[in-house]
Image: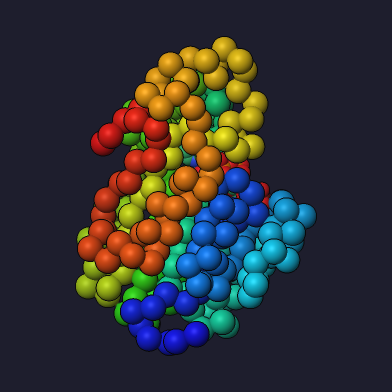
Length: 245
Ligand SMILES: NC(=O)c1ccc[n+]([C@@H]2O[C@H](COP(=O)([O-])OP(=O)(O)OC[C@H]3O[C@@H](n4cnc5c(N)ncnc54)[C@H](OP(=O)(O)O)[C@@H]3O)[C@@H](O)[C@H]2O)c1
């Protein structure tokens, strides 16, 4: 593949073994990128996906830790850097605000917020060397709207959207574009445990009257990774009409 600096070559998708991340890996591979599939605990699905995608490579790391992010940095550096980073790894612990635990706050923020901030900081150096980069942060509509039971998660996603804006402003000079994709309610493992009542009440909020698919989110990610050359510092909502920004 060409080393032309205007052509993305290697993409890393964190949490790429499952759900939205796996769909992003498929879309980016279909767009001609070599895809690094990062996973933490989902080894089997990540290996199966890697067998499905020509040229894909696997990276295991716990991104809640500095060591995990540093190991991803070293692996990408050895491969000559990367052009596209999709910060998709994330988790939630839902609880009423009044009873939510500090330990859960720390667990969620270690991955969603501290982990995203630190990994991006490290990998951005590799993009600066290339004077080219596309960073796509998977946030959430909840970061914009808030949601009962999701004070911890919502704060982390609002912070990611803020990170997008600041890093976009700082890195534009290096031809590195930074955007958020904020999904609404998407059918994945993360939403699989919703009760029938919760599902019904969510559906009442969605003008399109259905949950989204991981592929519908991944197509927006693909656009920002390989087209979107005048988009930076923005939040792209993919939510069936719940919220438009
Ligand atoms: N589903 C939705 O409705 C929805 C809506 C808005 C935003 N999102 C966001 O979309 C992203 C993907 O979620 P999903 O719905 O596809 O659910 P998912 O399948 O549970 O994906 C979450 C991913 O995050 C990774 N991850 C979690 N903790 C990690 C850690 N400590 N270190 C490294 N990776 C870690 C997981 O990797 P392993 O499985 O390998 O551990 C997993 O692949 C998340 O950021 C989520 O907040 C989802």
